[in-house]
Length: 138
Length: 138
DNA sequence: AAAATAAATGCACTTCCGTTGCATGGGCAT
DNA sequence: ATGCCCATGCAACGGAAGTGCATTTATTTT
Ligand SMILES: [Mn+2]
Ligand SMILES: [Mn+2]
Ligand SMILES: [Zn+2]
Ligand SMILES: [Zn+2]
Figure 1: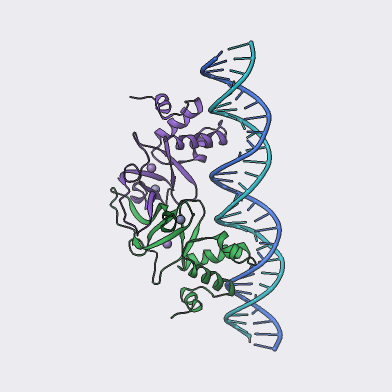
Figure 2: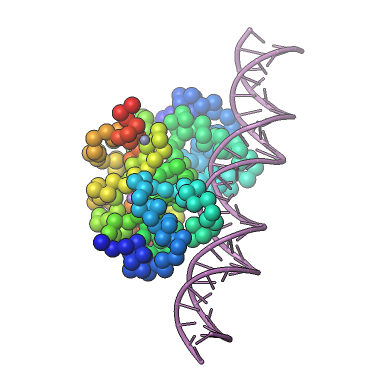
């Protein structure tokens, strides 16, 4: 089992104390997190540092950014061996209108879609919205 | 052929001079527009008025809002007889990374996707990204 | 037609999030 | 130990969305 420390190293991210904390916090969360979520989790940390931590995580493929339509960016860890590639790694996301939580549906990859001549698809964002499993049973 | 005036009436929107201008501007655009786009098109108009115009247009089903991942909301006219319903009216959008334009792919409806037990899907946002037909041929 | 009512508009201001500039500090290599 | 690079912290900025309130314009009532 690879440690968080080793994983960051492998991805080319220097494993500072703060970065490890953020990584572990993301790892144990089952929902996508906003910068503010993370900021609230570590009252001592500076917002800018966290912002830049997420930015380098994203650049190095540690996390992927999620745009769930709320207008606020969220982040979740990438799967092992993820390259954030279409039809390979990119998956659906689900945003619950009631609890406002967004989850990765990593089992559901983005299906191939044929577009008119001339359109070159390189990336995709698919967000389903409604009630999550927890909220629908009430 | 129904006039813009009549169409707004039919949708329950009072057809003021400004609203008609905005409607017609949206109608002749082949790409989705931001509030700022519209503001720039009518230098005399107040931003708030345009903001509220788009808001009522959206509420009454004249336009639909598009979240293309740029973080800026865009708007495009709904098709005739559109109810903004999943698998019926909701369609894909394409955002070009080069020219930053976003277009409606109204022919491409959002396909049905089976989710795990408990998830109730009511809405969806699908944005494909890459190079548009104009930008890819250069 | 005048008065009363309702709706739309314009201006100022606020809030929220993302982002950048710059000074400081801490760890690593030489 | 010295110098260097990178991470961090503080402050400030910018864009876009949204709100409050006064004013104008349109519609209804008398
Ligand atoms: Mn995800
Ligand atoms: Mn559209
Ligand atoms: Zn929920
Ligand atoms: Zn383009």
